[in-house]
Length: 173
Image (cartoon, rainbow, N blue to C red):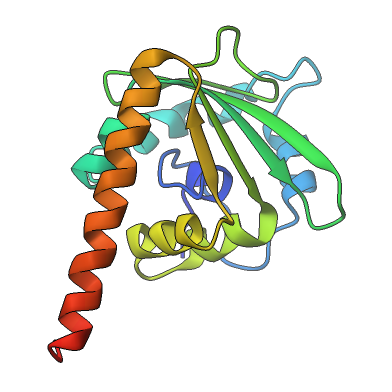
């Protein structure tokens, strides 16, 4: 099984850097994936192209939420330490991934390693993402007026998804 890295990191859903499907030591993975200066290791550049292909397969609401952002991603690791990553996307394409926050971040995403792993390994990644948001285990906020509006619409989409799911269960579907 292959794990999109950003799904690990963003829970998400975005970057196709892959690792084996076992419990992942995120710190060791990040130490290997980034240079000492915090840039993505050059040997992982080719995987950005595959990540961008995978990104195009995401549901529209996820693409609209993360498709044009400068994301500061804070991750609490299982050992209690923190990692901050930067992901810059332009026109639904990942441009850069760094081990530090981007300048002028437009979005802030916060989660923990266990939640990121749960989403990364889920059969239904969008459903796992919505569940993590609903449980407060994955939080995101817009840091600019444009991204705040995008987050508002994403929140509406999550609400509608929950409503449809509840109605389907109620009706026995």
